[in-house]
Image (cartoon, rainbow, N blue to C red; front, side):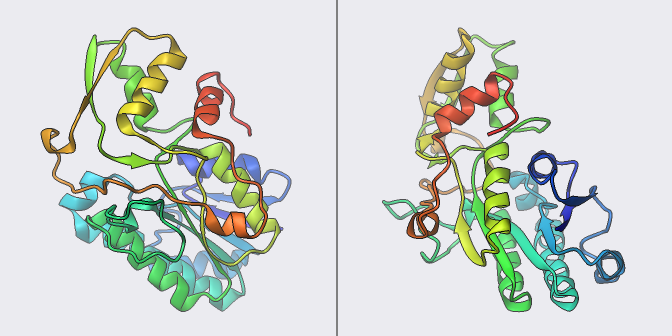
Length: 280
């Protein structure tokens, strides 16, 4: 298969390039094309005509999206619209990566694929708008919602804790927000399974289990043999311009219904990452 990957130099994009190595991959770096330009997108993909487009290019910095919603919608919503429209024109299938932040976190149980969405922040709203365009314009689409990504060659929570442990003796970390940490290599592997199975629709894909940011930080410290003291605090005590859901745990329910084996636990994935593993 011919696979085009937008945002191929990013953390998830690089993991996808590795996972899809047996196929003919066409890695597209940030800005090539400018996903917010329908002309650029059409020009690039009308020539390439891939079987699948894996669309990872996005504005994912939550606080930046809150302070600059125009740019968030330009990249995350308009970009998704352009990719979806051009994929449909060329008969390509499209994978669009979305987020746990499309939910408001008020539900007590983990969120299933069809639960009502109600994002609390501009990042979540811009990604939900992207979902709308993908569903509306590209019949052969696959929306993959995921959460709390960590992996090689990227800026993320795990790396930040490791860096802070070198300069701090103690750290306050939020304990009243829960989600499912997800290793990009594992997400890329599941994407490969879904693509080769020609799946369509919306799937939740995360590593199994869930935790709070505080619990995740404690596990990072423990597995790394660090001496950093991690103190739990409530979100209200943490200064941030952006509202975040208290519970954004995603249940991988459609995978379960289809009998597809779920990904390993987040603890196992975290240990593999910290030990230098880049494969599932």
